[in-house]
Image (cartoon, rainbow, N blue to C red; front, side, top):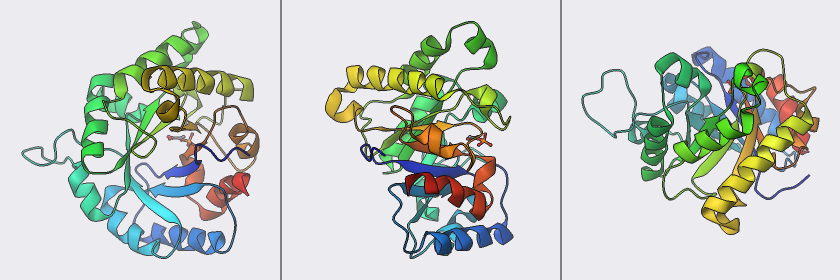
Length: 252
Ligand code: PEP
């Protein structure tokens, strides 16, 4: 399987995870021991357990990320968390523009861009999410929607060290439905074209493009083999070490 860009399998725990859930990180670290998996591995737990998750992952290859950040680094924003705070807690990356945040909090491409810039300014990798709704797919608007989100959500200065893009069709998230491998390849190849024309081959060709939406151990291998797919962003199936490990095994 292609190893450039370097693949990433990232777990998004969403609003799931308490101290007891750290056992899954210990279990996963144990399972990964000694295996040759050609990908990076990350878990993005709720912010309250980032520091403990980082400690649980200590000595393993598991990196810890966060699920959202504010556009500012500090100040009067009750309840929000900045990239600086997340970094201080132990995160090395942060998801921005997840469709649940776009839907639940009305996040726009412009806001997502500012959040990604805030992440970059703290040395965090921004995992920028894009994806079409079912209505948009049915109307044949997928590629146009994705192009708009990619262009609108990427700040200046994106490169393979500070940016990952996750294509997550909204209708595939948590639904058990997935696009066909051909549909995934079509969108990923389209994103690759967009970012190489915007940033040049050397930069745009090296940014990892993750697929997300109902990835499971049973479909990971074929989805990860699609053209221009460089890993996965995994929700439900990242909560249990056994399932998440089953997905990572696509890179064995
Ligand atoms: C996600 O929300 O990022 C996601 C991909 O969820 P799931 O794997 O549960 O579809």
